[in-house]
Image (tube, rainbow, N blue to C red; front, side):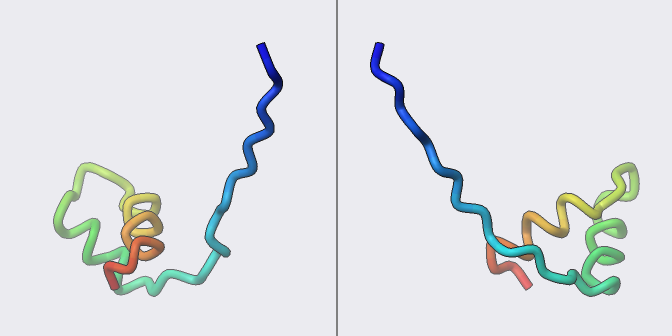
Length: 46
């Protein structure tokens, strides 16, 4: 099998506003909200 070199393209880390994280937590209080907020923020849902 040939060796395939995959390079991940990660978006730069940006500061997510606390208000945005709080809004995610308000929608789903059983989760931390930090990772969901980061994912949504990076996908342009701001």
